Image (tube, rainbow, N blue to C red; front, side):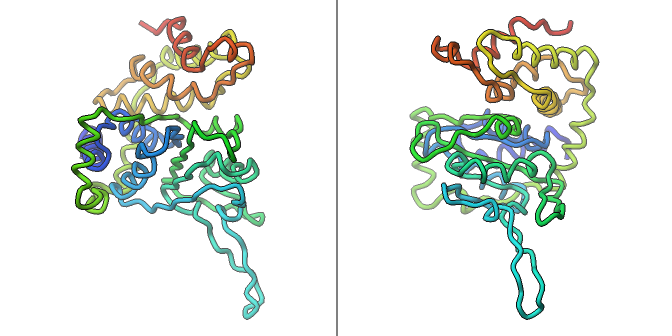
Amino acid sequence: MNPQELYTKLSTNIEQVLQGQTLGIRYLLATLIAGGHVLLEDVPGTGKTTLAKTLARSIQAKFKRVQFTPDLLPTDILGVSVFDPGERQFHFRPGPIFTQILLADEINRASPRTQSALLEAMEESQVSIDGELRSLGALFFVIATQNPVEFHGTYPLPEAQMDRFAMRLTLGYLPVSQEMAILNAQTQQHPLEQLQACIDVTDILAVRTAAQAVRVSTAIQQYIVELVVATRQAEGIALGASPRASIALMKIAQVLALFAGEQFLTPEPIQEVATAVIAHRLVLDSQAKFAGRTAETIVQECLERTAPPT
């Protein structure tokens, strides 16, 4: 199965459950194959949790969900060593982080200390517990959700945490016709209950290797770096995008090029996902916020000012 066929097959399978979310599914799959993580920031009831479950079932991946709450502890995510009095030794009980797809639901409801438990895992696919490094496997994908309209009992994600999400997505509300189709599809039961896997994890890893083979010229690399550097120099920015943003932008654009059957990376996929990859990493100063500027508009301005290679 070539990458284009796999993408079509997988996205079609997911759309059996998530109707009308073609673009969100496209970006989610691109981030998965690129080896990044996704932050789904949207209002309640738009299908964030359902999307994570549907993806896991479609690729036969191990899936675990953690409901983040203010009293959640790092050990509730990572695991803990428990003393066995019979054997007179400690045994490690792995936490839910030891999976392939982890849904961190309402991540901004946990304390910064608990949120930080994900930092090493998201960056290196490993965790340090009791002085021992434990691998999380080749496919470790975090889908975190947060509700932007609720502030009571929430903690803003720190900059270091935001920087580890390759992309931030919103699903949004559907048109009336598609929302009516969802009602019709769930008259008897939820479509997720009948969903069957269409590929497996080894297929995802194979496509990941193929995406890495998409060639990136020196001129394209320079374009990516200049675009990211422009965010650090933009007016109203207190903290611009990091080199991690450059890497994420290149890798996700490579996957989109692969979906299109291209062997070389061109500026178009970079421009398509630049806002979703970069905007959430930017920190605006107080004057820019007061003036009504947003991170998204600043990224668009940087795109307009940065000339692509010809």
